[in-house]
Each structure stands twice: as structure tokens, then as C-alpha cells.
Image (cartoon, rainbow, N blue to C red; front, top):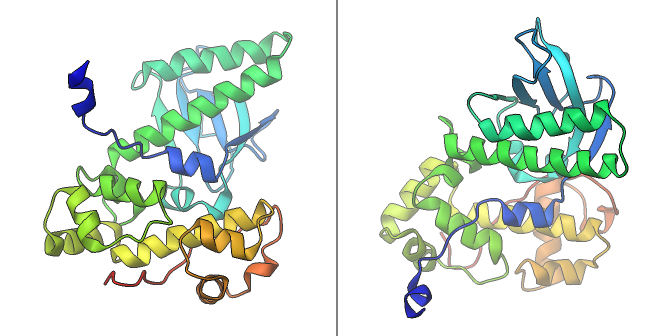
Length: 267
């Protein structure tokens, strides 16, 4: 029992995004507006591949047959993770056996109407998207950006710390200690991997969360405090620099981007 107290912390790369930008799923009868497709490329009538287009929709790949389709909303351009994902994620059921079982369940619920079928389909699609994004993070990317940072064996720990506790007055020594590397190395590796300095990324994340809080009905003052800005005025200035309009114009249900600036002491 005592040993459990010394277990290393596990850094969950997705939870903060799922809390800030809830997944919403709407089932589709065609590919016109769908961005999550379960397809058959073998002509067997059974699901063979999963196709997820985080920022767009489109037609079926040549020779593919549609088994199931849905429209997934994960915060749109307001969610930094959506912007970091590849334009298209495609997974073979042979590559991810757990996807095959989920896909077959989704198709079965569509083929035969049952009580609560819509809810079951929605929940299954949510799980499928989380698994697809999890796999994308594990794969990493050749380009600098958030996905590369989340895939990095050390940097992901500091990123998760910022994501989970944006209001904390983070300093470079804190983050480099979490990553387990020196201050100088942390700054260099972070900028090279993520594509911007730690302070700029942190403020981008804070502004993305602030915009999400505003859309949920929070006041500017409340949103600013929740994401670590010292005042509503400081939050409004940073928000205006990033988005080009004031926080007051971020209406409920709006769709906005990320942000930029520096936390005092982080450079």
C-alpha cells in the first residue's frame, strides 16, 4: 500500500482538451457533411478503415463503400489540438483491432434500430475519435507544433502541466523540472519542437481557454481569472492582439482561434 504513494504521475495528453472542447457527434446518412467515415475498401461489406477529417469533409476514397458516417465537432478552429492534427487521419482496422470492434458495433446499431440506438452510436463515435487522436499523438509528426510536443517523451509532461493548470504562475524552471531537463535545453527543445517559446504557447492556450469560457457565458473578468491573467484589462489586450476583436464580442456558441503573449518572467 505504501508503494502506491510513490507511483509516478501519469500525464494525460487529452483530458484538458476534452474538458475545454467537448466532443459532439451528429450522425449522417451521406458523406456530404460527415468528417468521420467508417468504410469498406475490400468489397466484403465489413468495415476495413476509419477516416477522420478534423477540419473538413469530403467524398469517399476511390473504390470505397460507406458503412457509417458522422459529423464530429471538437471545438473547430477554437481548439488548438484540432489545428495541430493532420488534414486526414486514416487507420486500418487491422492496424487497430479495437477500432474494428467499435466500428462493427456502430454499423450494427445503424442497421438495426434499437431502443437508445442514437445515444449508443454517439458514444461509440466519441470513443472512436478519442482513439484516433490518441494514435495520432503517439505517431507524432515531422513538423513542429502541438502534436510534436505532445508526442515528445519529455516535453509532453510540461505541456500537460500547462494544459491542466493554466492559471498557475508558471516559470521556466518549473516547466524544465517537470520535463526533467535543464532550463537552457528546455527552452531550445520546446521552441524547436513546438514551434514557439514556452511563454508564447502558454498564453495561446490561456486565450483559447478564455475564449471557450466566454462562449459558455462567463464574464470577461471571470474568464480572465480562470486562465491566469492578472486583470480583465490584461486579458482583453492580449485577446484583441490575437483575435482582432474584443472579448465582449466572443458570443455564446462562437468559434475562435488561439492566442499569443508572454507570461511575466517567462522568456
